[in-house]
Length: 362
Ligand code: SF4
Image (cartoon, rainbow, N blue to C red; front, side, top):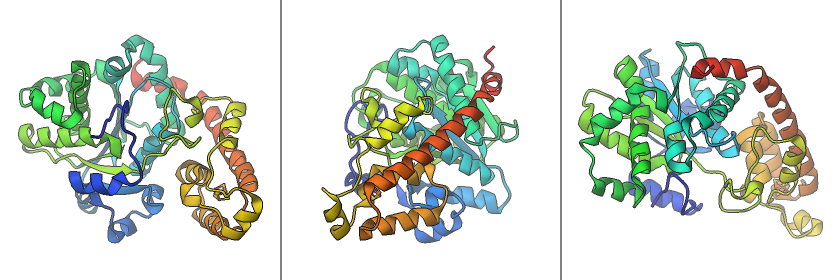
């Protein structure tokens, strides 16, 4: 069972095909991908599946409004995992979607016991991060809210709840606290909010595959309660494993990821300690070549820190042929990561006031 709160069962590489089949997630086929080449997450095949993305294309072709919705649980700083979704949102905004970004402070209370007021500094920090990634915050292009302060999402939660039984929630999520079930229903509100505010329109929610239970619940309830609305669609990306080789990025294992607030020294140490797809020694690597598809250095460059596709393709090829060695490649990766983070932290500092304003926090 997929666990969107991540306390159990990391998704293994071999699980993706089964999950897609079991829950009816469609592949990004080649003709769809060709239409999306401007978006690097499709181009690089990091996004592998979708629901109802065709509706967004139709809206683009017909010059109709469409929405991209996502959110962040303000329980800590952005890390490599959360920033993947944020970067995807920025790419969708460039394609013409209006961004709806929900700060899930009700969820951070239910899941992590963080009171709303204590979540505020994280919320400001998280919103400053997405602004530094290039989100255009103008009101016709972006709407940002906090769950605890947004009556629409609470209303939707109450309205749809009369269609929800405990058996349904158990079947989707397994046995959880009532608070987490409530947080899931509030999230239904987050996803439906664009259509409640601005009328029926296609909505895409970029997620990691572990969040699919929320998408299924929302689609089911939209179908039954909001009969005139479009069923919210989604795109699915491969989850990044821990950079140290652990199954997943987890806060309890600080070496599995780094945050965008960390000191450059600490980030450097972690990148240097990342799991590679290299062989036992230099001789073997030159003879057999490395395995970039298993390598966290290659993956973090592909997801975040290398803009240029040709550079990535060249590195992949040289690794496989044994012409690129891990020490050299790691040093290059460290340089790129630190340059990006330094620049990001500088940009972000100047965006804190804007983040406060968008969140309506004094
Ligand atoms: S050469 Fe680079 S891509 Fe290849 S395994 Fe080593 S670090 Fe990874």
